[in-house]
Image (cartoon, rainbow over all chains, first blue to last red; front, side, top):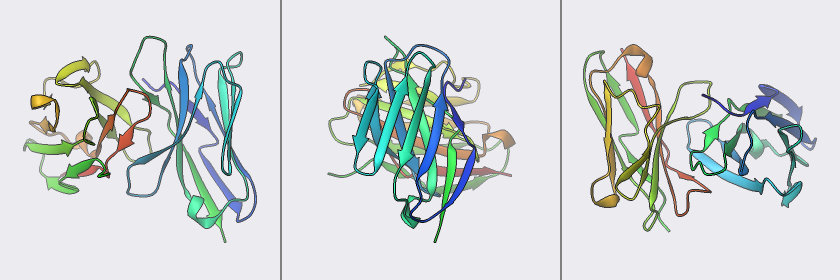
Length: 111
Length: 112
């Protein structure tokens, strides 16, 4: 069963704008990760945030985690055409090594 | 550092036929995963190995799917007999510590 649910399912913005994607999950987690998937390719790890962290940055990426609301957001600032991809959140629970992915947000950056 | 290698990249078969996918993980990665990704959906874990032992295969349809990881390195995933609903991309991933996953390019299966 899918643990994370991304919102929106699809997002289309202009190059240079910021993109925000949200992920909600149902059970307590140990870590939450975000992955990117370009069309026809494998997934690439972007960032990991632990359950005791609230915010994390990596380059143009900013991830927040609210464990009380069981939700996370991924912000991509100053978007570029190369950011066009699907973005997935993935969670693993305490004591469980299994990483469960959500359905993904399909992001399109228009030039 | 070489990435996760998968083959074949594409396979087209008719229903009831069999197919096998191969995965070579990143050297030294103890954990290996097979995920199934149906078009428009997120990856679904089929089986997870730690070295050559199975950690989780709860979502593997064992009546038709099998997987092995001999010697704790390469792995094969087999489907026999295939059904139409098995059409998907089969992703192999490996991890040094069961946290960040490194994915291969995937094997796209079309069942006619």
